[in-house]
Length: 272
Image (cartoon, rainbow, N blue to C red; front, side, top):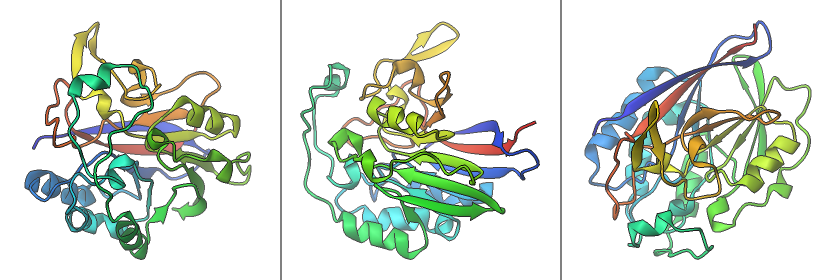
């Protein structure tokens, strides 16, 4: 498979701070047969990130836990943060692809339950931090980072009250991590003064159409505006939002049009 490495430079750290390289990926939707995708993921260690952030939907098959752990293995020795998406709890199930374009009525067609606890334990055993409804403080290059996350809002598993509270003024950077960037989650993180939020879920629209100066997504599969479906965006008085368009896709909708698979390397730099 081919994929795009999105590179972002963001001056957000206190003056004089060293640059922190953050690898952000999402929506791998891995299956045992996706050998080329697995190979690309294993090569990401060559980007030499200081921190890895995954915004969920690692899995795309009942037997994908070992596949995902093999693909991620080179990265698991680097500090990492993650949350889960719906496909980390339930296997894929066919549904009409056109249903993504309809107004979300809250009904979910879920496949069979996955062994999420085993996958979670294996990630944590390698040192990655589970941010599903939890808050941690980590030190990267002597820069203190406060990170908080929510469980999957698409399945209504989010409970922001478990991590709520104004950002600690003593930390250098306060980030939020969530799978599906629903307005209620972004609003709560805004109210608590976070600096930067990472999300996935949208697949960048997965199918995009030509638009003035580029392309436009037809959906985000949540209540995020379409123009924010991928990349780094910011609204006044809100945190920066970085949405990964993801690497994979549901095996029942194996199409990406004008929306290549991607991962992002963010260079977080000091403010001038």
